[in-house]
Length: 214
Image 1: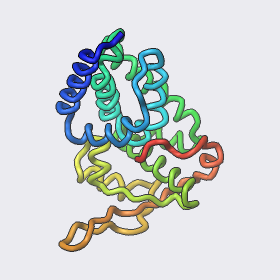
Image 2 (image 1 turned 45 degrees about the vertical axis):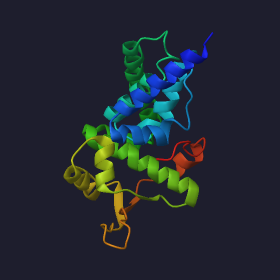
Image 3 (image 1 turned 90 degrees about the vertical axis):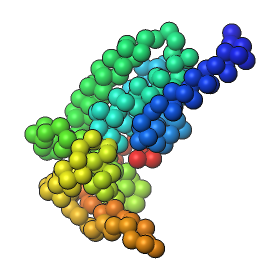
Image 4 (image 1 turned 30 degrees about the vertical axis):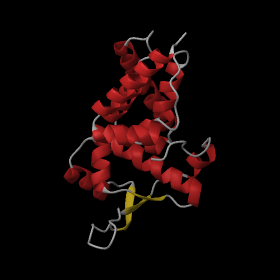
């Protein structure tokens, strides 16, 4: 049974662990994980599966996905005391492989065949853009979404230049409106893109809107 002192120490340890997180990982953690998941040592594998399969693999690349899952462990170390950190991370890696395979199997055959031919960064961009487009299709009826090359670069850990090239040369995207850089007195705006592969079947089979705000 926990005492008040135990709880205070655990809270202090969590605060210190959060301070050690890279700024971007901390920001994504606060947006995508903290509002959705409460650590539970009895269901941690299911939690990781949901975290990756329903959220992170649609929002960011594999490197950041593992960093965020690791942060989930580190920020809840007192609750996961019976599970080794190494085992937790290794299991997350296995789950990520399984969830990616399951997602790919569910894709329409044309999209799946195209996806398999892409190099890793473009596969990650494909997943993110497709998920953003599907989310907008479900919410607005149109698969048009906003995404800047700088934001994509952060999500899949590549250079801004490479992200710009992926977005502007991808055959599965059409730019609807060019973004606007920051200027004094006006807010910057990311470019808007339209997904040009058919998403209607995916929308019909969807179980609902993503729970975390991409």
